[in-house]
Image 1 (tube, rainbow, N blue to C red):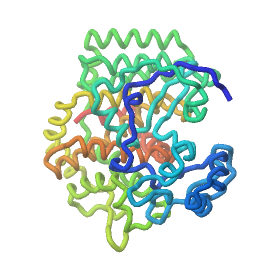
Image 2 (image 1 turned 180 degrees about the vertical axis):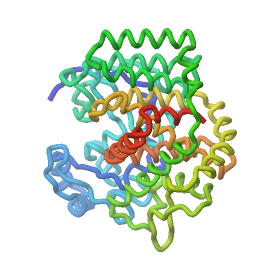
Image 3 (image 1 turned 60 degrees about the horizontal axis):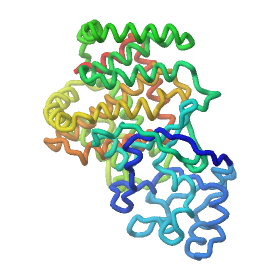
Image 4 (image 1 turned 45 degrees about the vertical axis):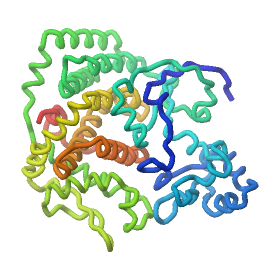
Length: 430
C-alpha cells in the first residue's frame, strides 16, 4: 500500500461537496450494481450487530471476482438497497459508522483519476448534489491543489491514465480545448464547432506533437481573424437529422435499463427521474409514438425516428424562450458542463476512444439534454433549477454504468456518417 502524499488537482465543485443524506432527491442506493470488497464482506458477516449481520448474510451475493468485487448487493424488488431504512438512510452507516460501508459506498460520487503524473479529483454527475454544484456554481471549475495520501483516494482505486499509459498528445489537445471553452467572445455552439473541427483535423496527427501544436496555433489565428466563425455560419440547419439522431438514441436510453434490471414495472416511477423527464417530451409531442415498456399501471413511450420531425421542431422553437431565459440567468451552466466534461472524461481516451469520437458523443449528449429540456419547458411554461438538475443527474445516472449506451451512441453516429463525415456538426445549428 502506497502511503506517499500526492498533490491532487481538485475543482471547487469537488472540494465543496457534502452529501445531503435523506434530503437527496434521488438517493444513490437503488438499482446500481454495488460490489462489496472482500474486507468489508468478511467484516459485516461477523459484525456484532445481529440485524446488520443478518442483512449482510441475506443480501450479499458472493462472486469472488476480485478483492474489490468479492460480492454484490442484491437489490430489493423495488430497486432499493436492502440496507436502507424507512427514511432512506443506510442501516450500516447508521449503526456501524461510515468506515463499515463497502468501499463503493464510501467513495461514491468521488472519482479520482490519473492524468499522467497528475492526480485529478472529480465526481459523478449522477449525484444530484454534484450536478447542482457543477452547473450552478459560477466558480465550480476553479481548481486548486490539495495534498492527500494516495492510498486514501477511493481506497487506492484511482482510474484514468497512469504515466505508462498516458498518450503524449492528450495534454496538448485538452489544453487547447480548455482555451476555446474559456474564450468568452465565443458563444457555446461556436466553441463546440471550433473544438470539434480541431479534434477532427488533429485526428490523423496524434503521434506528431509538433503538427498538433502548429494546428492549435493556426486555429487560434483563425479564431482571432474570424475565419472559423464564418465557417460556422455556413453550417446548415437540419431538423430532420436532429430528430433522427434524437429518436434513435431515445429508444436505447429508455429501454436499456429495463432489459438488464429485474425491477417490477409498477415501481419504476418511484426512482426513475429520467423517465419523468423523458415523458415530458413524449407528452409534448402528443403523437402515437412507439410503446417501449408496458405494465399494468403505466405505459411509457419512446420517439420513433420514422415519424416526421415537425412536432419535435415546433416544441424546440416554442420552448426556446423559456430555456434561454433560464440560461441567461445562469450563463455558466453550459460552459461549466463543457469544462467538466473535458476535465472529467479526459476526452474518453481511458475508454479507448479517440478525441474526435469523444466530441461526437458529447454533441449527441448535448442534443439529448436540450431536447428533453425543451419538453420540460414546453410542459411547465418555464425552466427551473430543480428540473435541470433532475434531468442532468438522471441522464448521467443512466450513462454511468452502461458502457453499452456509449457504444450504441458511437454506432449511431458512424451509421449517420455514411451520409457525410461532417454530419455531426449539423446538430450545432438551430
